[in-house]
Image (cartoon, rainbow, N blue to C red):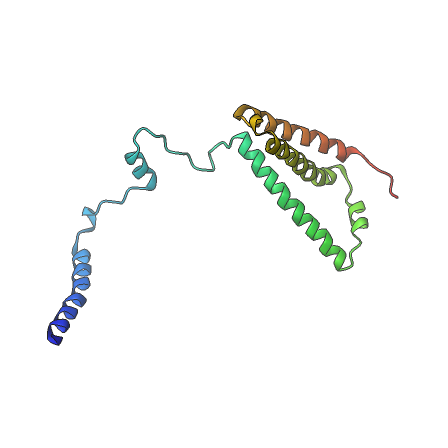
Length: 164
């Protein structure tokens, strides 16, 4: 019994070596290159168009609007964390904000605040009235969100308040 086990183990140990030797002796020119993922999907689904690369793909306005809401939320969180951290180490945050208060800087601060706030209102309306969520309505709401946020942020950037 032990001898048959040893013979089988020796045979199993030689099998991978034979496969490697056979693969090494095969001519390289006869090997066909493996098709790419796009080629395999085109062969599997011949009537379905292949999606373009993300760098040349034009995102719909709704997707851009959703991404912008998320990015502004992250930006607001990072900005608040930065200001709080600066205050904790002793920086005079109000003086710093007064020193950089110019229209472009104020727009950079106002746009995420306004966009994220209006985006939140839009989602609250959609949650309370789901029947209003149609493709056309969502596209119009996304364009209105971009436009209103830009106009309101521009107006806020041009307003100057007297220091207290």
